[in-house]
Length: 232
Ligand SMILES: Cc1cc2nc3c(=O)[nH]c(=O)nc-3n(C[C@H](O)[C@H](O)[C@H](O)COP(=O)(O)O)c2cc1C
Image (cartoon, rainbow, N blue to C red; front, side, top):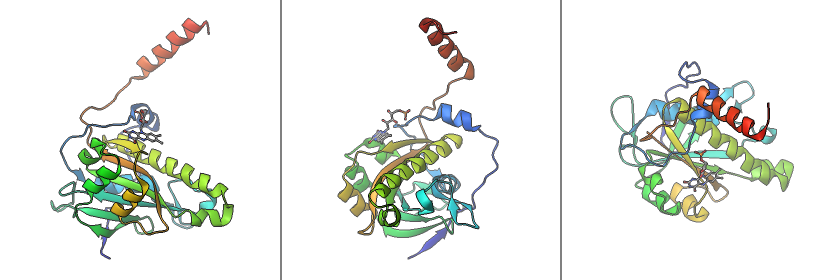
């Protein structure tokens, strides 16, 4: 299986505050037909499920008992992600390896269309330049927590997806979380092993329109609502 080292993650940034990323985050369903850079993909995958405490192997995403049941797969089409030398990532499915901050090419080919169909033909899946399939090997968590572990895994996927949303916003990109899909079709198209189930897809691209709200607008709105309710 061929492996690709991603550009190393950056932690320093003076682009947006956490509060701005939270305020400007929206679900985007209309993307420009422009590739994403491998630097952006690197940052997004690191934010989603990247190494942040090497000594313990802990990741950016909280995980029940640090069992880390999630596996992230990046699905791209032809010329969707531009490499630093001007070449493009080959189309197909790549597993993200947090330990090395690298990608393993698991399934080559034009599978983006299959992912789109598995996601009930939601057209933003096709328009997006990267679809991140968040999948899990539930056994890694249920072996310690039994049935309750199932809940923990799904909650973790939510944390992970939110990390993607916020990093995408910080980078000036757009994302949409997708829960409506056929599990078997998506798992098969992505190239998941039998013990790994898909939970969520996050489509990422360059949004046609960005969302913005000023602090003043937000505060004025809340003041007005309070006044109408008779609150001081
Ligand atoms: C569990 C879950 C599943 C979702 N599934 C889809 C989906 O299949 N397709 C889609 O376009 N949006 C999906 N969304 C996005 C919601 O529609 C979106 O978050 C909501 O409209 C609020 O908009 P906002 O994200 O811009 O705040 C999903 C969101 C969540 C939390």
